[in-house]
Image (cartoon, rainbow, N blue to C red; front, side, top):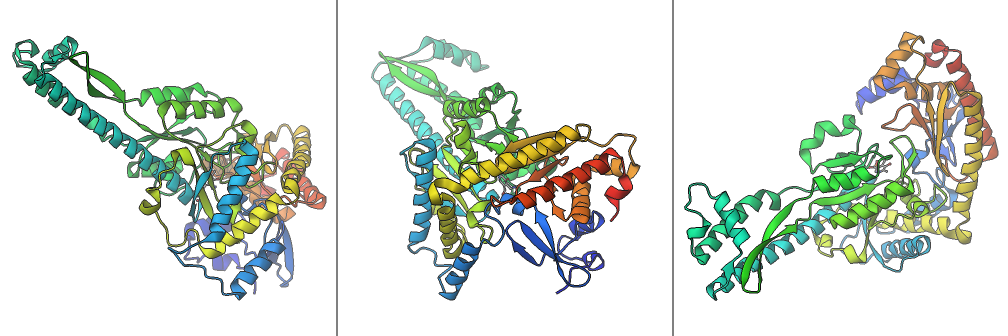
Amino acid sequence: MTAVEPADAQDSLSEPFLVRHLVALGLAVEYVRAEGNILYRRGADGAELPVLDLVGGFGATVLGHNHPELTRYAAELLDARTPVLAQFSLHPWADDVARKLNAVLHREFGTDEPYSVIFANSGAEAVEAAVKHAELDRVMRVEALRREVEDGVREARTAVRGGAALDPAARAALTAGSAGVAGGDGLQDAEALERLVREVAEADAPHWDAPPVFLAAEGAFHGKLVGSVQLTHNAAFRAPFRALAAPCRFAPLDRPGRLAELAREERRTVSALTVADGVVGVTARELPRVGAVVLEPVQGEGGIREVGPEFAAQAARTAEEAGCPVVVDEIQSGMGRTGAFFASSLVGLRGDYFVLAKGLGGGLAKAAALLVRQSRYRPEFEMAHSSTFAKDGFSTRLAGRVLDLLEADGGALYRLARDTGERLTARLEGVRNDFKDVVKDVRGRGLMLGVEFHDPAAAGPPALQEHVRAGTFGYVLSGYLLREHAVRVFPTASATSTLRIEPSVHLSEAEMDQAESALRGLCRVLRDGDGDRLLAG
Ligand code: PMP
């Protein structure tokens, strides 16, 4: 097997435009083997050349590529002809995953409330399952309110037939709202009531049918499918598709109070008739409107930004006030990378829902999960939602084994992630201290780290300026690091001047040496304004 030559890649039929970009940036490489933090490509002589992978499958290879215990287990499963697809039968190993996740929740959040688990195939799909579950819950609450309002009308009619009067304020509103009619004062109570029922129904009709609004943080990334992309802040990903699903409004991370303001702005009420002391009156009832507040504890694609405890607390408060769930998206931050299984446990944010994906399949299977706390769980969801491949026998068994590995030895891997992350951060901070004119910031927690670069000076090479304008500067840096230092990094999807550093927990000192010296090399080239070296393909 030989590497795909750029000339072949140019003719790619799969994502041809993307592949041409990779070719132009020197990133069109075929990897032929993967182990731990190393991906292997082939050199011109056919020999394998190691590349240090700091992208880690966009954060999915928490345990590294092809973890030996997982590949052995996967081979065993295939050899044993384990059923992969046997829908609508018992899946005890999936239940085993759910039990293990509950044990982690219990330990990290001190909760005894069980969470039900719905499996999915990808992160965006799990987010969409969360969105759908929240919407089923909201619609059911809207319907319950509608039944109460209808009961109120029936009770009001009975009361008026029995001699109850219409509240004068309700009559006055009726008079004011009925142009060309003699006025509520001249009507019998029964007629006035019927007019009131009609007018209230007309005024409230658009509210009852209004779609939900979701709330999230600026910089958020929750997926790119039709529903989840609405929750992804980056307009380049979201805006063309905003007509396709319920909208989301975004609050800046440094203004937690904005979340509460947005919820207030979206507040809608409907009128309900009530009978008290022989008088029929109208009261405003709050309509469930906000679908969910959705939050990553550490934003990944938004440039590796930790969400502060204040914003997290406000998200929980806003959700509670709006009567909706808070959905904690741990797709990138979860599975141990930040030093705890759930990064949200480090800021005291317990979700009503959690979503997991990426690392759950151990880097070998596509697995994702939605966790919903019992008090908010709608069993009806299980018949309303399904997917052929979700909860399959292969991925769920692997997920169970991944959880065993993470939880082994009293959580030794979480401590390893934290300690390795601290050592790596210290090195990255060292680079920043020596190159403050080049490196703007080093951020993150555990092994979810970001290195943000200053845009190169406007006086720099025009070709580089063009990349800055096009948002591809971070990809140029990635091309350089791959070509010159055999280090694989990528920018975060929505903040492309920030390189993501998300190796596995088994990153060695030697690998850290390589990462540090590569970054120093990059910084020197950037400081020298050596555009030719950066861009040489
Ligand atoms: N949520 C978060 C926080 C993510 O980082 C991602 C992927 N980068 C997603 C959702 C979407 O996951 P997927 O790519 O598996 O659809």
